[in-house]
Length: 302
Ligand SMILES: C[S@@+](CC[C@H](N)C(=O)[O-])C[C@H]1O[C@@H](n2cnc3c(N)ncnc32)[C@H](O)[C@@H]1O
Image 1 (cartoon, rainbow, N blue to C red):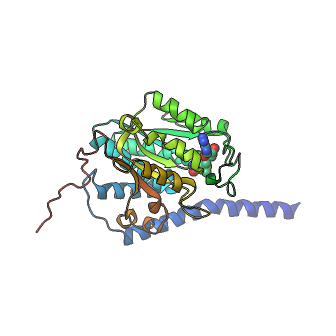
Image 2: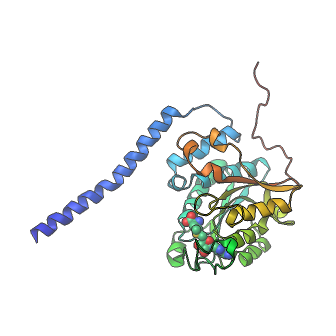
Image 3: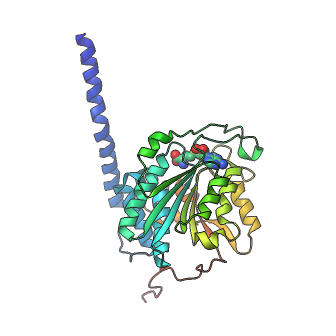
């Protein structure tokens, strides 16, 4: 008996050391970042400021620590919305699964809303029952199967903020209802539905008149499944993006945010996520050419 209790108290001790070690590591990383990263002043709302503010969130906001890409997308969306005269903006996660990403997104949205004064409303789209049937070869059935990434809806619901809405069902149907109801313009989407067919369905948001009435002129898109195992131009998210671009050659495209990593400090300049960030550009959007203040003071000193 005595041995057992000594064993359990040893376990408790080890466990109680786990959290401080994580915090210690984060503090050490933060100090290192302070030393190696530049600390220039950028005017609020400018490109440099967006990059700087997203990184500050990474150190201060637990959601952004898990999803720096969601922080960058939400900061950009709210900044652009404000520059174009909108007081609210919608940020979307397509593919919620357990809800870790959605919870991170809603924490980030709350912080960005408070700083920028633009209310960020969060929307999550998911079947609630995991992946649908995977039969189309372009959906990578060798990698995915029906029911993968199931959600515990009852548990997740209790942790959602009032600004967050979860739309359950097939994205082809729930997106229809989203578009039919009142909501702010969309400024950021995370594409994390895994399948080509589902991603293609979600991109209805960018087809026909939808982006003109429901989106900002440039929407940040994070594409989660374009790297690593079996990712190819003929399948999955990469195919959905390529097809979209081919069908809209003249006035719309989903284009990489080229060189984003070079504008970010450590550790983001060594991370994978900056290479998974895109902008959906709608050149036919009535506000596409409205000045957005990203490059203030274009006059350079002599
Ligand atoms: C990889 S998981 C998402 C992970 C989540 N974003 C995260 O970061 O934790 C993919 C999700 O997409 C959802 N999904 C795939 N196809 C869908 C469709 N046609 N309609 C709605 N949800 C879909 C699945 O239910 C699954 O939960």
